[in-house]
Amino acid sequence: MKMRYKQQIKNPYSLHDMVVRRIILKKECVYLEFCHGYVSTNPPYQQIDGKVIIENVDLDSACILFLSELGKYGEFNGKKISLKEFVKEYDDFYFEILDELYGFNQVEYIGYIRSPKIDELIQMSLSLYFSGDIVYETDE
Figure 1 (cartoon, rainbow, N blue to C red):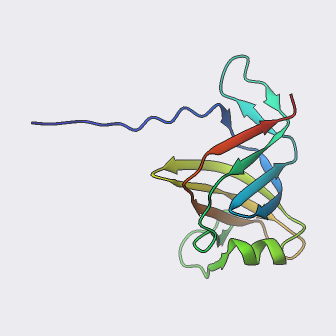
Figure 2: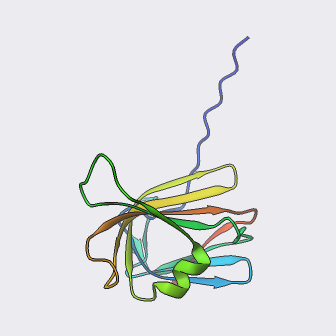
């Protein structure tokens, strides 16, 4: 017998090409504030101002991975830091999300970070385990 299962996640908004300008940690929640909001996945696909709140995050395992410089392949020297450390150290940054991955109480946002503290455009990943909801809080 074969049983097939395809996980289908239908998010109300897409974060693709959206730019995070601030990450706030409050209790067990992670708040992502955007430069220009995010885009509705329903017609007419409007861009809407707002923030994302991820509830009941395991902050002890929440991390940032700094990967390679833009366009670089092959060997690299990456860096992994806790999200708590990132929030303390990087107060002036722009994180453009290119990929968003969801499943099994995990979320990962992958993209590029620009910051005065980093010389080059660097590929970055934000990885979270959570047991709550993902809340899209809009300004509408």
